[in-house]
Picture (cartoon, one colour):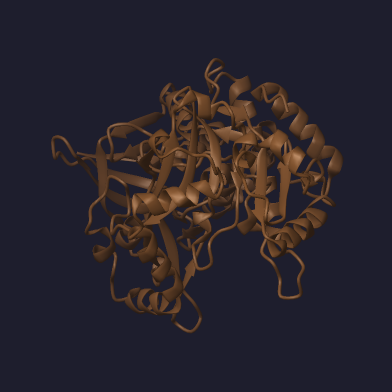
Length: 493
């Protein structure tokens, strides 16, 4: 039998959950179906072990503030990401105030965000970055120091046993956070399920999408347990399936999706559960990425709360797998290659030989070599305290440029059909942290006319009070917004 629905959300992660709660508020009568291929939601990229959980707000991630050729630091991307995370916190605040997120479970916690560098060139860079960022209201609480005593007060674990032969510099933001995106996702989808107009299919996989003459989408869905078909006819389709989005975009055969390819990158973390060690470090500390490494490989020593337990993680160590999903198939990469993207993918590979070499080196690393990397951040680390954990799978975007060649891109990108009836989200970090802003962009693509109405504008302002205004340039609004979200989300800093 074929069932008709208004909106199909493919993927049971943070993106579909966020879009779902926005649409339920904006279109309460719409029939929404969420389709997840696994037996539970938030089990892939949104899961706490598969997601860095940093609450990316550009306080400490040095790859968001590249050095220009003239020696200045470009903070444009950092400003955008910091504002987008504040937007995410506003929606979570609204959901918590309206009992759509648990009042008891701490899905977001205070944790300082720090950048830690050594060597004179890196110290100069961090100082230049700090002087540029501190001018902006959204970063005006940032501290900077080269004083070893103060750094030891902040991160004793990283300073004890360190040989101070190189200058060290640190920036510190007290208002950083650690976020369990899996917990947020599960809560949002649970609240959606309580609506009469929302249906959740778990263990169901979308196999094909075909656009009909009337503009609607015929979607072939298969129950992975019973192999039963459950076909849908949908007015609108959103593909938010993480690494699986590229394959589904290709199945849709929309013109706008041609030329896109994907490059999968896996990752590993070293994890410590020894409480004597864990309790000595309370910060998320990011360093500088190795030359030739992808931005998602910036090393960091992180305090994390995973399933209610405090842990310490270091990494990531990059790996390579031909899977597009952690629980995917080793054939994913090969099956994604088609005539429209074979040259973009080959040319992107030729242009990114240093990245390929970096990944090979990472894959070939011995356990002892991985541990040496940890000791650069935690000199007195003991080998027996750390276990290797497999992190999530990410698919970096390869996009055809105007010359027909492929360019490897980092971040996220929305690809939508000309009529707005289908949109897909491709890419990786900092996706989860900026999910609300990304989904607002999806709404602009899929429902441009409705978004202009007074009704929708009013509802969006209710959920996101700063909607339509800048938190970057309006200091009073920025601080007032942070005060409000911190009070509701119980963020003491």
